[in-house]
Amino acid sequence: MEMVVAVFIVGVMIAVITPHLLGAGKQATAVACQQNVNAIESALTEYALENGSLPTGDATTQMQALVDAQMLAAMPGQPANAVYTISDPDPDHISVTCQVAQTGTNGVQ
Image 1 (tube, one colour):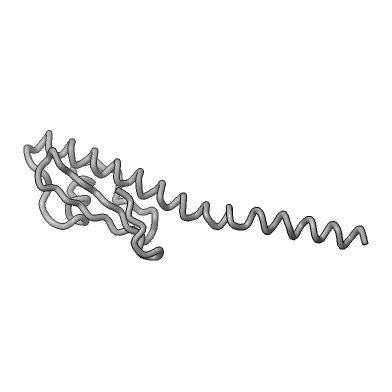
Image 2 (cartoon, one colour):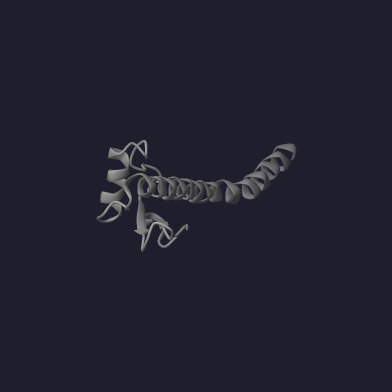
């Protein structure tokens, strides 16, 4: 009987903990995206101040220009399936978004 109670208690503990562990991955992805978005926006602002304009091209080309200018240490690698979109009508209104392909439209702005 004691063994049944112990197994039941362990089962309840697992049932309580599992949802929290599964949600931790999504939260970590959102945090990584937001940190990358902040870094890219800051680097774009710095690039515009130093060069008088923003880099041209799509988001990947613009981020590579930031890496080449040593304003980003490297291309963002995490989260692995993140797609960045840069909207820069002018240097005062830069918007970077991050969407993770594996979870659908989990955009962070």
